[in-house]
Length: 147
Image 1 (cartoon, rainbow, N blue to C red):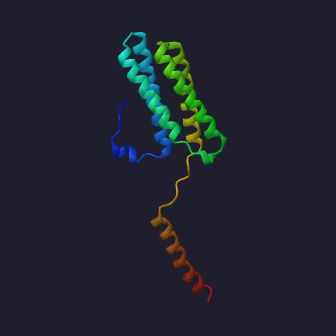
Image 2 (cartoon, rainbow, N blue to C red):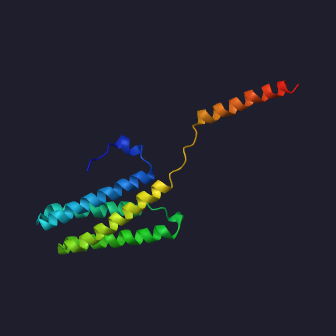
Image 3 (cartoon, rainbow, N blue to C red):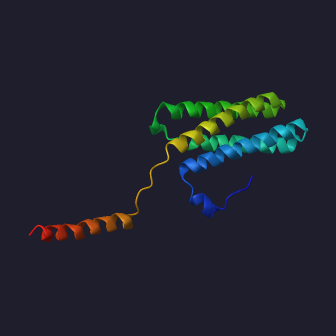
């Protein structure tokens, strides 16, 4: 996975940052599963820890004013984090793969939701000003035409 520079991250919307966190969690979990299968337990442990860190960051970024969905996502993130800890402890690839499926489903749903709720482009302040000035210029002309 390519890591973005700080400058590029500052240009991302909260929705885009959330998508990046999902992608990072999926990538790290896939690596952890592969390392576990290959009995590279030190690398797997590091990847599992990163996945847990990402899940906690996702939970910390929830907007609880948005309603029950935030509470439900928090519960799902906590469940997945607990499952990751147990998968790491037991070296249980099946348990980790179940979390991977959940992460992929949530990530896909998030992408779909962000695509369907793309805000319409708002005119820039300068553009809005120009439109206002044009309206004002036309108003006196139309008044003169009526004389």
